[in-house]
Structure formats: structure tokens, C-alpha cells
Length: 252
Image (cartoon, rainbow, N blue to C red):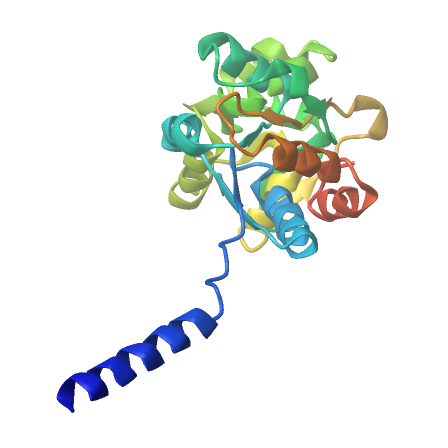
């Protein structure tokens, strides 16, 4: 009798298992890496792409040393803060990026960040050359040579160099210094960075005839196992939907 009951229970369990719905497969995950400058619009595009495709898109960014090794292990797509920055990454890390998939997205303009209320009345590059003005120089990432390219048009390179009170390697360090050192007066950078400092800084635009722009490239990483999905994401980054997200963040 006990054996009969055991057989009935086993049969019932077997029938239940056979009728159970199969576990749903996890959607593929696209991992995207790059510097902090374009991080916000790329994340916005990633969220739209993920919803449209029913996939996961994880976008991580910041100073290169924080993400590049992880990208070499699990990354699918890389974006950059300027064309020369991605070219330099390709040169320094052969085999990391698939150059055949490289695309050029949107460009962003340089401008001058000054203290809230602009107490030094800095309204032009020539004003930055005044004696006693203290400037920040980001000598890294997409801003390498940015101030020099602008100052050279007006013969102001020696004067602005004299006023460089601080040189750092990336924007994260520049933002930290801007908050910690109130004696710093101005910073030639991309206008898009003003969004991170709206409560602590004003933006001085350069005349349209003097503006300097740098691009935003992206490419697949060579190790990706999501090539088709990665290429679709690169194509989506070039879409008008994504362009609107970049424009809202300060790109042209």
C-alpha cells in the first residue's frame, strides 16, 4: 500500500514537472565603456535602445584607467571624448578596438567656465590673459591642447600659459579642484561640462567665429561576442533619436 502511494506521488510530481513552463532566457547584455564626457547622452541612448530591443545595455564611464581593463574582459562597445583620444587608445592597446567598425557621432563646442556670477568679469579669451587670472588646464582626455588651439588664434599662448594655475589629467580632477579651490577663476573646456556645475559656475560662450569643436567617436571592441547587437547599437547612436539626446546634453 505504501509503495502504491509512493508511486502515485512520484507520478504526480513527474506530471507537474512536465507541465511546468520553461525558464525564460535572460536577454543579452551589451556592455559599453568610455570617458565621462559623453557618458550622460550615451546612457540615455542605451536606455532607449534597451527598451526598443528588449535587451540590457550597461554603460560605464569615467577616467580611462577605471574602466579599460574591465572593457578588455567583457566590453562590447567603446566611445570616446574626441577622435584623437580613440585613435590614441587604438595605438596604445593594439587588438582592443575593431577599427573597421568605427563611427563618428556628434561634436561639441569649447567654452569658458567661470565662477558663479562671473566676479572677475571674464568675457573673452583676452580677458583670460589678464594678469592675476588663475586658470585650470585639463591636459588629458579630449581636452589636450584645447586652450592652446584657441589661444593661438589670438597670439595669447604665452599669456594664458603664464596664468595656468593648475594642470590635471582629466575632468573629474578638474571638477574636484574647482570645488575645493575657490581661487581658480576659469577653465577652458567643453560647454557640455557646465551641466555638472550649474550651481557653482557660469558659462561664457565664445563667438561663433572662434568656436572650436571636437568629435565623439565609437566602435566595437574586438573581443565582443555580441557583434550584431553592437553594430545595431552603433547605428542607433547615429539616429535622429539619439542625436536629440546629444543635443540636449550640449552637442551640436
